Length: 218
Image (tube, rainbow, N blue to C red):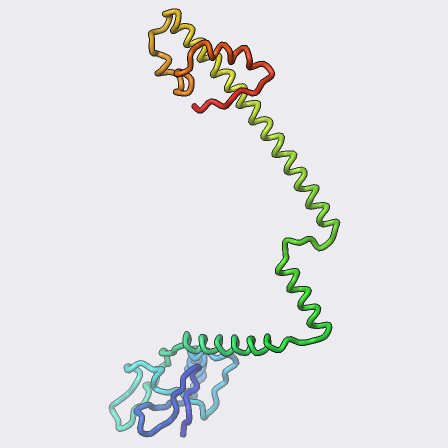
């Protein structure tokens, strides 16, 4: 007579007053192997007194023509609650880890594990002076490269500013000598340039040699 269900996490037990039936694993090797696969228990080998309860079978799997509820020849268990079982296993493992953590081991093993933990928590720290020196040299090279790029960008910016000043002086001079229509500079020059008088641009041209010019917002 069956006593309990072999499915993981199933608490069903035999009770004649409860409408739950128990069914042996099939003797046919192929069907038996399929049942074991569906049960999903590690290293599980069912015996002749291993049962699954009726909770794990769909209603279409039963033959109700007789006085007792029997499984059909092609019936397979398909109803399992693996999530609940996995959660309970995780909770048990967590409680076990907490118990182990509350009683840390003493001796050289504990010192070794503590030193490894410190290295993990402070992974940004260098393990030896040579490693730190290599890292510093690498950073210095990166800084030098960035400085060269910044210098190149500033030179390009200065040349572009000088070209804008020359072009603005030319347009305003032509406009002042009535060689261009009045107000044309407002349409072809950026706002930051056409509002300044021509005298200011001439001063900028005279002062641009050897001095960095302010950035013009185009």
